[in-house]
Image (cartoon, rainbow, N blue to C red; front, side, top):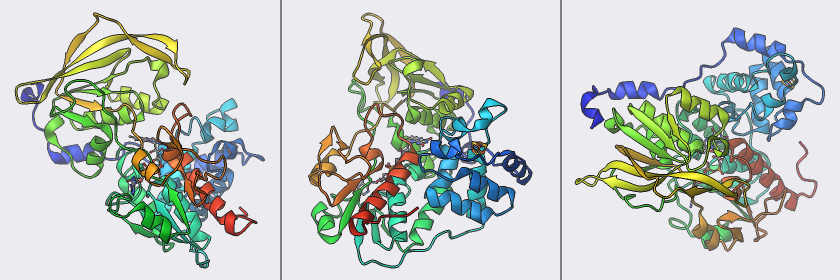
Length: 456
Ligand SMILES: Cc1cc2nc3c(=O)[nH]c(=O)nc-3n(C[C@H](O)[C@H](O)[C@H](O)COP(=O)(O)OP(=O)(O)OC[C@H]3O[C@@H](n4cnc5c(N)ncnc54)[C@H](O)[C@@H]3O)c2cc1C
Ligand code: SF4
């Protein structure tokens, strides 16, 4: 195996590899950048932000040295605004809409957002207070960006909120899914703490449907919000998936975020199957774990890949190789039951599928074997169908059916938001959209009891 020639890399070195890559702005850079903003009337950057952050206002506050005010402006619109400053595809959102694209460079909105929220984190600021109790109770199932956002807004409106979270820590994919070198856990934890400080109870290590029944939840609370996201990576459906050395990309990244860095990848050849953001994260994690060669196999072409452009660039800079129009046919094991190769088949693109993308078709006789030591599966995520059905909710293949705008499900007391309502072919699943949907659900619940609703 390739690893025999490679010197061992210490765990400390591996830890260093997982430190945040992007450095924040210095004070001087932040001052200069904030002073470049034109504070546009009817600013297009605000409209391009799914959570509608008042971007010129938070930037102006940075320019005037009011960092607390700036962080409050950001976080009042986006309860996970610190994470979003690091993970949002800003070039497609706020920065893409900045008027300065027409003349010079857009304002570095993401970096300025990070500057203000980092200040609040470093200075241990508590930004919001709970509202006066209105005696109503809401259960939020899932403590990811959607659930936290809904909980935060409801708590500010005086609701007694309990979040039920399956994992040992809240934050969802911000805590366990998005790689540490782009989003360190401490950022997500600070956002969770901000929600807890509003008297929201977070019951971690509690899987709804196993540790507490669906009936108990619906009986005990006035309203329920389903914000469980998506589930694990589906099987490839090929021989050899049970072999040692075959990983689910989500679990794989989670292990690196939980401090379980293994030296097993040092000097190894890794193949990642899929070409979405999860695949890129699986590939860049493998590189940081010391893999000698990492290839992404995708059955379509570069054009159809779903990863964000910045993620793709990042992977290329890391030295990840891409094999387009290539699908796995069989994973080959050695006598010890460990992966030693993957048989692939070449593909061509056929007719368009309902989502508009052309169907990949295998080219018979084009099979070939790539010798590998590990296979990381990253072909999307399955759905929490069982739980959705236990609640008796209408769904389409595990995507909960909701009313436009209110996110009310087929059961009027139950709402759903975030990845659990994210349908295939509907753009990208993003943290910022999950956050906005969480807010929308909170306001829809409030409107049931207070017809005036929320005046923003
Ligand atoms: C690897 C990866 C990289 C990504 N990178 C980006 C990125 O760079 N930028 C971006 O904007 N988006 C990114 N995304 C997408 C983004 O993370 C999601 O859209 C977002 O986290 C959705 O939020 P959510 O709250 O709906 O779900 P999640 O974040 O998945 O949170 C759901 C929570 O529900 C909990 N839960 C599940 N079942 C139960 C149960 N039965 N009982 C109790 N709790 C339960 C889970 O433990 C979890 O904490 C990425 C996704 C992945 C997988
Ligand atoms: S569009 Fe650009 S210049 Fe105008 S307010 Fe927004 S960030 Fe500032």
